[in-house]
Image (cartoon, rainbow, N blue to C red; front, side, top):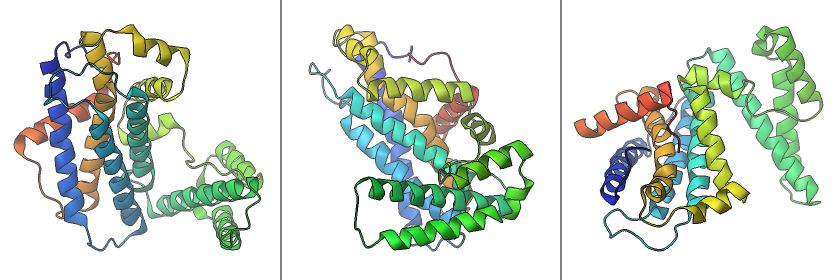
Length: 283
């Protein structure tokens, strides 16, 4: 963030984002219509496309670096919301498809994730008194998934306390989306957990309408280094996660995606290291 002091600095960072995004599009295009044999690979490809769309929408909201410095206010909260979406898609990708786990744990994770989804949809439909004809099918899916989890071999291998907590949540009809904490998932992903938390929290401050976000929008005059950094923040926070997802898809589908241009590859290496090592410079 402290490297951004002028409009030219902002332009340089956005061009890095653009280069990575264009390579991500090329990766996605190379995988279009190709069969994905394993369920976690298929899910991984779908989550990757979702993440990529968030990145594209985020870039469209960002002030155009090719134009003169903008004088109007930009939609920082929407940019932060999309950056949060990128991070959440990355985390789901890692849990479902990216982490190197046994086939037993992989199937357990997918079932738990799907049960969380079915239960959440039933609560939404129930809260509105819906008569949607899909409800019986979702109920049947939830019952099937819950039974499969309760007798799953991986469930029996969990530590006693964790297993008891998870079984209690299943009985209460409140399954989590992940059976691991954020810190545990970050450790498995090779992402600095403290940095991940700080970045996510700062983006959330702007997504929600809180005093901090309201004040900061009016605190920095347009054109100052502080205003430029604030404008670039969602892009810079999302970029390491876009990089990681692209590289993970390459590992998940070896030999099926193009290699990045050398300059883009160097850019991706630098941003990946940021996610691994963390930084105090989050604005």
